[in-house]
Length: 79
Image (spheres, one colour):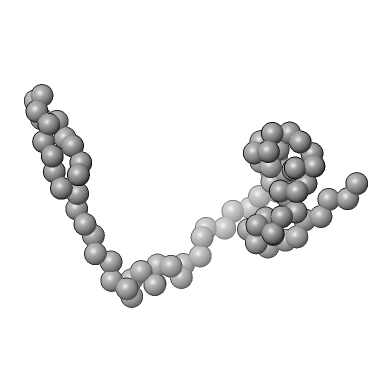
């Protein structure tokens, strides 16, 4: 339930329910996400921001299976 105020009074109103047909839900699920170009440097910088600056953990995040699935590329750090 959502609350709204009208001149000092609180009025409760019911939230609207939206029915989704199965066919339209499946149709929407098939759409691919908008492609964005990201450089390797952007990914590494984001990993450093997320992990907190530890090089070994950044390498672990960048070469993880989740990152491989997200980017479509397997990244390997050597050194």
